[in-house]
Amino acid sequence: MGQVSDKELKLGELRARIDRLPIRPYPVSWMVIIGLGYFFAFYDILTLSFAIVSPMVQQLKMTRLEISEAVSASLFSYIIGAYFVATISDYWGRRWGLITNAILIAVGSLGSALSTNAIVLIVSRLITGMGIGAEIAIINTYISEITPAYIRGKMVQFTYLAGAWASQ
Image 1 (cartoon, rainbow, N blue to C red):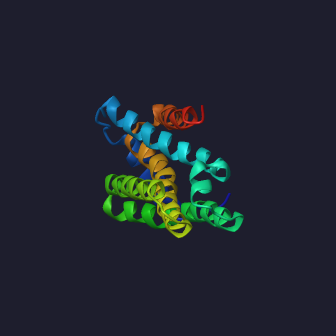
Image 2: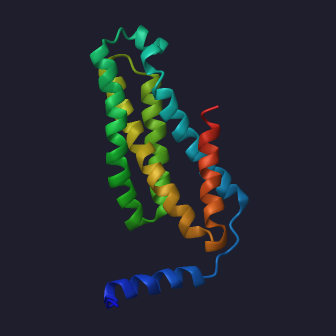
Image 3: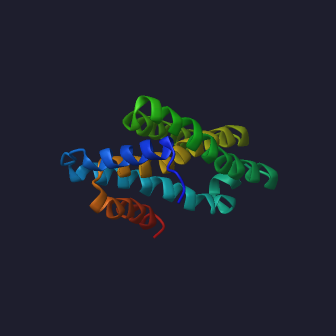
């Protein structure tokens, strides 16, 4: 049998300690708010596929290249947001991470709605994508941290259910 490293031992102790910590009763409203976050994130992801036929694209007289740049900006910025904003939440707390991504989504979505040309739309989609990427990364972590082990899977599934509801 192999030796257990000090790092593995410390990680196992940490997991056991987290599961032993008393979980205070969180209001159902927290789960609803977090579920709404996923709802809007998944709604945005799903509507992105309809961007090519959007009246906005026609009004802005966007070329195929500009449309693909706007879609690519959103998708690429998911990675940026998942890494940078989620890292911020590791240092400043999940609450501030969730607030930051909500602000990014709101500002980016408003910019997208009010865009007057392709460049403004692309930049706005970049900002929105950073918020969505962070939201997807932070919510799973947050749910895992605030729920006891015996219902953790159910709570994570609840947030995904809210996201799937957005696709209807």
